[in-house]
Length: 167
Image (cartoon, rainbow, N blue to C red):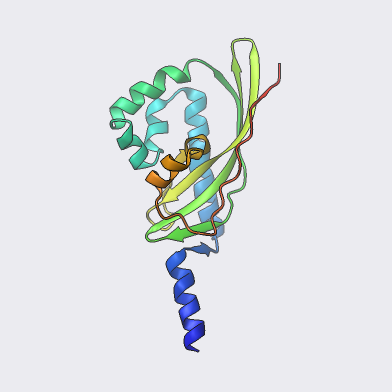
């Protein structure tokens, strides 16, 4: 009995997969879709407000990040921003994490570019609200460990794909 209890405690301490409530999956998907809509509209403030706090702080704060993100949003037109089904929910400490796949098509001058990636969702309130980091921002291991020193062991981030030029 002690062995079973010790195993359960160890699993909980290392992070766990959380059975997702349908409304929790819907909340994270809706928040991810809000990023897509903000990107489509060129609304840098809305994007920054849905970005994980330490990333915003590292960029110099909300206003500086808005000033940095804003001009880049005018360089392309979003043709499609599709949010896939969120993966498994994982917890570590007081945070819940999830990978949300996305597919984005943009027009840059005469080129159409399509890419598949993901948003990494973080919730500090058991999934009631979500903040995100773009999967591209987690490709650097040092940066990833700096932002998330204790990711749950079972959480695997998907490999990033090269964007495709359509036209």
